[in-house]
Length: 269
Image (cartoon, rainbow, N blue to C red; front, side, top):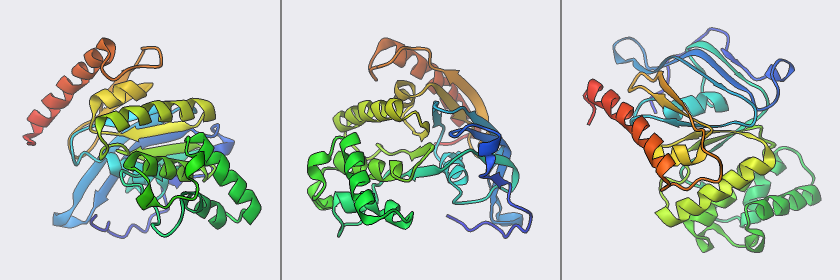
């Protein structure tokens, strides 16, 4: 990623919004992000507005390079916007496409790591890691190292680690993109179960429109670069849903048509 030009203005990110909004609220108002400067500037986001209510599951789709990952990085606090206002009530954690586990640590120790950095005592963090692994249905694999786990199991460990950060907002950046269809379908069920049992907010980025409709309370469509919200599609179908159900397929087709029109308008491949 290109480094952004230095911005000496006060940060436009407010992470003390808990007094105003309930935990799990995300407010992105007219946020812009530019990488580089002058003739080399790349406009990733342009006056993007997105609000996530507590406990909502919001999926974000768009063409490659439209700023989806940039949006998550801003919400997570890994980067700063160049304009607009961004407020997050509570703590946000980010789950990537790659599990990014430490190969020399067991599953339990990987989950314990953020708890240790948070200052939790040893016995308490071991108990908490065990609870989190039970939540993702890996209680019997606490002592396994990453190379002894399947791809789907590694992502479950990464999910447990993210949840261990006392998160109010879980940010998921194409977490199942590298998995086979069967494993991905199983993890859809798992993520939905965990989301419903914890009550956290989720912002889920994906290229897969059917996946977005399968999981989301709403699907937000971004324009090609620079990213703006050009469509917001509520998903009214009851849960649990199947990714191949007629209702999911029909709404996904509607969103895909608009996405295809946007890609064609910009001349993207």
